[in-house]
Length: 314
Image (cartoon, rainbow, N blue to C red):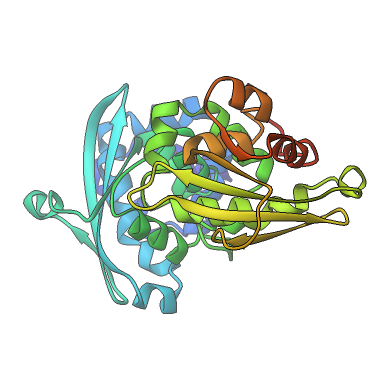
């Protein structure tokens, strides 16, 4: 069925392609895209008639797959800059206005978008059909966000992939091992930009929320320590967290009040590498990427009992 569905596009003219994207049940189209390999999709979207109809056709139907309550709370303009072979191929924008979604057809108006999402045309197709995760793509550098990153996250939380009930972007649903792989693929410059923007508080809160589950209770059973984290590289004051380890369990609090045996000081992008297994604590200290104030042995003891997600240790 899926092959037949996409075969309809192979000889389509523009009018036929427009009708296809306007009338085909979205669940069937998502299934067809999922069944196609990258070469097949690239061949299809390489046809001018199909490409010109596909993206506007998808964007015009996004309201059908929105959570009405969440959509009502979001306002702003989002532009999609789609590239092929490293060059800009086309741009499209949508305006969200407290319950409605409209395609922006005026290029001058689209130039004033609140946030610009840049990715390849193939990745865009995979993203909107649920084969790729926008949060992971952003972390690894496959998706670039310029402007209001919180608006981009809000938009991702509003829409769902046809045939699925969950939000398209839900940071709390990201698999830690998948996050570790994504961070491993990202350049240092990209991670620095991510952790200096609006995605930063989402990432930090999620990492520290999960951190207690990574503690090896058996190895930590005899430890009694409190270690702070002071993370710079953001737009304002450093973010501060405290991890207290007692009887094999960790408790995380935000801020830096009270006694601490040691405080780890680093840039947030280096902390993200540490928290995904791509930067070892000892290597980080030796390379000057992690600083420790107070009892260094306590800081290293904490690091030694946390089993971070899979990643290549630096």
